[in-house]
Amino acid sequence: MSTLPKQNEIHIERLNKSYTQQSAGDLHYIIQDVDLVVKGGEFFVLLGPSGCGKSTLLSLIAGFVSKTSGQVRVGEKEVERPGQDRAVVFQQADSSLFPWLTVRENVEFGLRMKRIPAAKRQEISDQFIALVGLLGHESKFPRELSGGMKQRVQLARVLSNDPAILLMDEPFGALDAMTRRTMQRELVKIWQETDKTVIFVTHDIQEALLLGGRIGIMSAGPSSRITDIYDIPLSYPRDLAAPEFHALYSQIQAHFDE
Ligand SMILES: Nc1ncnc2c1ncn2[C@@H]1O[C@H](COP(=O)(O)OP(=O)(O)OP(=O)(O)O)[C@@H](O)[C@H]1O
Image 1 (cartoon, protein in one colour):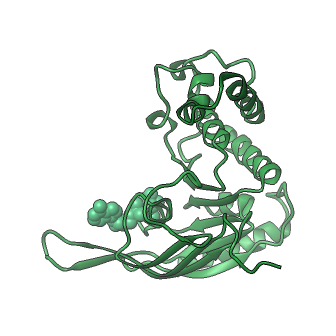
Image 2: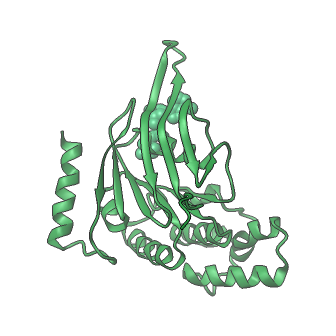
Image 3: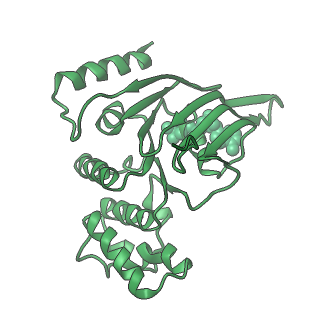
């Protein structure tokens, strides 16, 4: 049996990111000595207070920003730049959708760039438009969609490119509570159907517990680290009213009350 790391496994070792503070001229560590292994096909949630460095860590994995020192590997490859194996879903779909393209054209954009023939493109976009529940809306433009629908288009577009890893930065943060719950449920279903590795950033404990197979707690910055990792032994879909859910909620909440 091969012992090589899976292509969708993420290894982070002694990772540091610092900026030089303009005023003081000294080094300011955003994250310091982060160690983490996310297994292939895992749903991992990064949970921490606002400003602790969650987006920074996600951007380092995405290859959007360069590290100060340490290692980020996907499979066996060191991350040096963005790659097709890692797709990022942002909080605001508006900034990532092309307003002059329809839902279908937005979803097919990456496929067109890869010169996939039209018939195959349509087959793939049909599949993911259906998966995110947007059948019947293919010809609409982003301005004709609600916030939740735009977020679904963003998700369908990302999924149609078939990345091994989904990096999600508070993707439902701007949605109303009901749409947010629907999207959370759909994301879990999509993840179960596609076996992708997901790293999902949030500062909402309830969201973390609804979604995560494991939850990594980040300490408040500066020099933030992952201080604790919780295995969440609850089956999906998760029951907000279950006593086990409440017990885990209180346990995790205690980290932020200290
Ligand atoms: N380019 C930069 N130069 C200097 N400091 C930066 C830069 N980018 C981010 N920071 C700082 O890094 C810290 C962490 O920011 P980051 O956006 O990663 O946190 P976050 O946990 O994702 O926050 P939120 O939950 O509010 O989105 C903040 O204090 C921020 O000011």
